[in-house]
Image 1: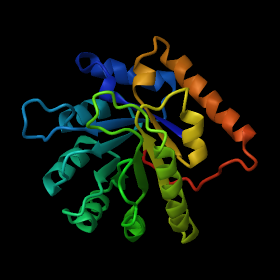
Image 2: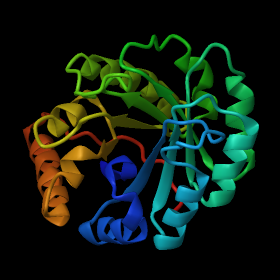
Image 3: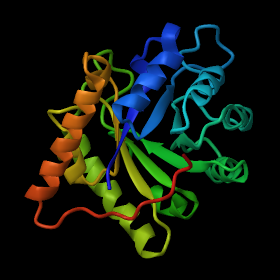
Image 4: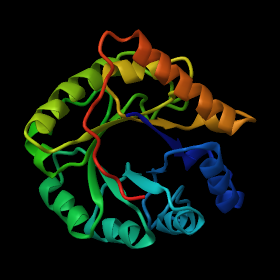
Length: 239
């Protein structure tokens, strides 16, 4: 079962509670936050106070993707603010095992993110601690943040690795994010993504409910066209 997550990176921050309530009414399955600035900087894009405001506005699951270096303090702030799932970037310089263990000890689900050009060699060692693997389909440093068709191969590679965890009895979901919309959502699903994050394609529309309904139709058409409908294991995410 696929889920559509609404990224609030493109939301109107001045009217965030109302924006979140509109996303709920439009049929989003969960809310996704990208944290792209350090919390100690005055120009923070989205921080733990934003997460708390979202939590007060809805009961949907909140996924927080920390694109900044993760720390014990940062993880604790977002957990206390109401995040359900915390995603840290895969990085050789960090103690990934300790960060993932902390996330789960705080009662949140744990995710690990890979960029479109990142090697996935380290993923198998972390699967026993993961609830979700995140694949970015666009380069965050690029101003346009355009979808990269080559990222479909990255999703497929991650899918194969994630399925080994499912076979071992631990269901892990696969999430994709980065300029995904009507033109490519079926291809992203076909590559193996379970959770699909939608940002500009949603907020650039005047009819959020219609956009989400259209994306669901695209996913349904993908299922009908497939020889074998994708039916990946579904991990529970707190609502």
